[in-house]
Image (cartoon, rainbow, N blue to C red):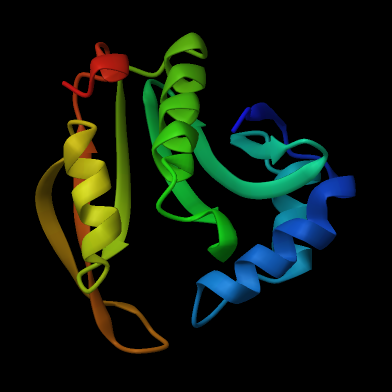
Length: 155
């Protein structure tokens, strides 16, 4: 499957919102994504396209030399096809190009698939945020990739 990565725009939001709704118990609102795209100078969001269809997206905030992943999601019909891995690799590539030397993210303790993906890309668990996800009171695992160089080989 040939994939194309491009910056997220407001034109992508109908498809992004459908993926968001299918992926998370407490999805972000359209307003939250619009704010990120139009008003947050630290935000970088990308979509992955199969043809003209948005099949996934990812975002991060770039603050000084750190990239903080805000969200990653893949349409349910395209999961388990390496789309999430490719999205993360592209996000990491862009972070390095924009001057980031390390990257962090939070992930639900129960999301074993995502935790394995991040670990395979070189992220290391470095802490927990107790009750971080207020919808379920679930903890978040804090993961870091430091340094961010060498991301393409999964080191």
